[in-house]
Amino acid sequence: MKKIILLLICAVSVFAEDPGTRSFAFLKIPASARLAAMNGASALWEGRDCWRINPAMLAFKQERAASFSQNAWYMSTKQNAAAVNAGHFGLSWQNYSFEDTARDAAGEKLGDFTDRYGVLSMSYGLRLKRYTVTGVTYKQLSQKIYGNDYNHHAWDIGFLTQPSRTTAFGAVVENFGGKKKIINEKEELPRSLQIGALQKMGRLYLVSEVKLTGYEKIQYLLGIEFKRQKNLTLRIGSSYQDDLNLSFGLGWQDGGYFADFAFLPHGALGYAYITSVGIKF
Image (tube, rainbow, N blue to C red; front, side, top):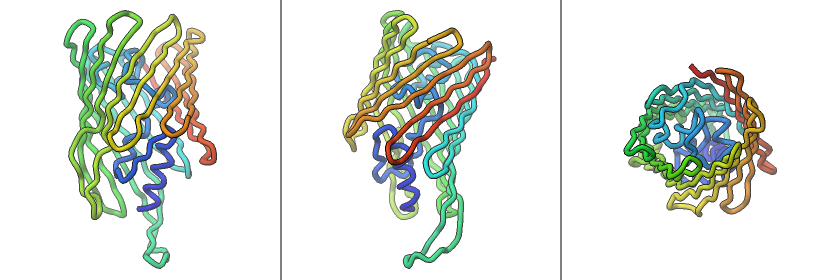
């Protein structure tokens, strides 16, 4: 179990977050390359996957798209994710797994096994006024730890208002739900409140955001997206909590096909990268 917690700390520390004793820390791992490179996305109202952070975006009828992502994290672990959205609805799936070894109190090997974590999410967006929207996501969570299965659920609730064509303000409560007994302890979901603002300046998008959890320091996020050419988009993001972390990414689109890539360096831990591909329909 210590190895599991250590691994999750490494994975999410790219965003300067310490999951503490939260057993569901895998919920903090980004599900797509664009979201990983941008960091803050609670007020991002355009783009094929912004609804995966704030479900309110689905009220604007985002472009219909299907995508698949693979996240290559530290210690040769991987996460696969897929999503599809049409109209005001969105459906996404994430699966995270890695090999581990069980040992007794003396350190003797008991056997090898695979830990698995999964999330199946259903999202819906609702328009309150012409430029004010809300949305909700239901998450069905599953974990397999040391051969034991644990199931739970969580909710995300989002809100966004767009006072002008170039400005937006958004907020989202993530992972709202009760405690779950994992092995011998009741564990909490990694709840958070994200509040952000977006300013669009021609081909440049600037997103700033704060993230509050109630059990750790405030996290400050900044994301920039620049459409360098018709088919090419450049991205950079930063997060600050106890120290500064950067992320980089690019996106390519040709007709109905698209691909995104994010690179996340993190000092002595090395780096992680995320690749997403998809199609509009």
